Amino acid sequence: MHNILVVNSSISGENGQSNQLINNFVKALPATVAVTSLDLNQSTLTHLSMPEIGAWMTPEADRSNEQQQLAAVSDSMIAQVKAADVILIGVPMYNFGVPSQLKAWFDRIARAGVTFKYTDKGPVGLLEDKPVVFFLTRGGMYKDLPHDTQTPYLVNFFNFIGLKNLHFIFAEGLNMGADSAQAALKAAHAAIADLTAELAA
Image (cartoon, rainbow, N blue to C red):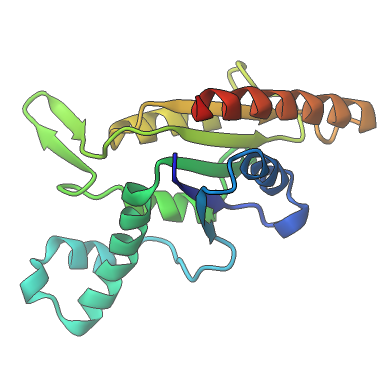
């Protein structure tokens, strides 16, 4: 494990619990690990548009200058994913879903012919499998319940592009009183300790 890609999506910045859990995870790793950080709140990602999709579908040699710039956004993000040995993703819950800025990143790393392909037996992911760790922070309790819309979505999406070595760190009940929040964070830190030891083995 040499290269780590960190993807933060919390609108709370340094105060975001998902960001803080990721920082604790990184601190537990060997000092020799190189970390690439992507704060989606500091990026200029917009919602996906047809001109951008059109740029992807245009052969590279035929792209206009504008299309080259549009395609470069997705190209650079896919390159970061491919270069990473482990990917850490902060996933706070906003209105029962993933943050919209995180969805915009997902839209740039799902590319037909690049990270997945369609076959007569269905879609096949093209990315080389690697550990992906999600840090899911919620104000209420959702894990293993029908209204947890995040976890199945994350599994389906990352399996679709070939990433199946998925790990989930949960911190729930963060808005249900101090005792609940403290217990949730204690459990999350214990899970982080176990997982960092497992990945470093």
